[in-house]
Length: 150
Image (tube, rainbow, N blue to C red; front, side, top):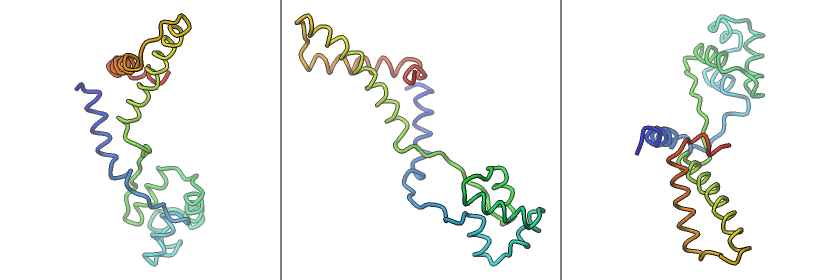
């Protein structure tokens, strides 16, 4: 195992709890939901954040629409004694994605050669082809990872 693989494993472990989460943010956004739950008016929240009431209301609307900046959400959340937690969560573990990509490329390369051999009536058996795919996959995984995505 090399540093690159270790980094991938560590990142997958850090993302695992996020991948299991299924809840969505409130439709009105977190700013409005938390502010309302605390019983703080938009005027009071704006005052705590050091912004105008219209800026606060606009920010709540932009958060609900998904157009607020992370920086502003972080600053306004702090006025509600909250911290922003932000993550991109892959649908499946990153290691699985890398290995699947390497296998797809390996299969395409080996099948191209197998097709040419079949045209020349020199087709290899299926076990040999599977072995070749696995060997090529391992070669790809040992190489520069960026080449998997070209």
